Picture (cartoon, rainbow, N blue to C red):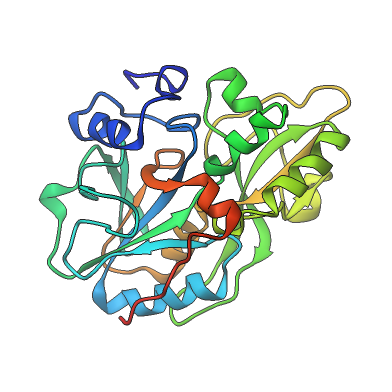
Length: 276
């Protein structure tokens, strides 16, 4: 990353997208563009899109939809103006038949006329609300990526897609965790309230110091781990479904949207499912 999250906190989302497009921003986006929603990305051929849409609609906790693109259209009008989904994410993952085969900084040369883009709400979006309430967000404090873990929480299967939740974790004191639950429950489009807090083994996490994605963070004396559903969950479902090609964001590397966080809190923002 050539531009830190601290220096980018007050940049507008279009500036962050321009930075990703030019290569000035190439890493995780936590803490960037204060007050605007960030989104996880999944791109699939149209033949697979309806099953994936149904998977998201059946699993709104890990896969809350913010926008769905038209087949072959790299813009996402529901997420903002002048978006080019082929270039405006800092880092992309490429999957073929369910296997991760590479990570790239843009996908212009991979774009297909039948690709459908799905933008899924991200917990980075509620972090400003936590910070504004005086709550510590450890990975922002440390300038690292949020730790994310595969869990044993089962998703509802839909068509060819199935799998288990991925969860992001933020350590907090119990009183702060209660306040965080109150705050995030008002933002269901970006995962809402936590899915678990306390004993990691209860949701299938054997070693809290070794996240499956992102970076480990210390859990200090008097703190408990608090887990939110995570938009990396579709990457588990993609590995199980094995579409011929799928493209996602790299964990922690989000699309910055023009959707104000306040619209998520007040309910002004509404997602309408397209006809695929």
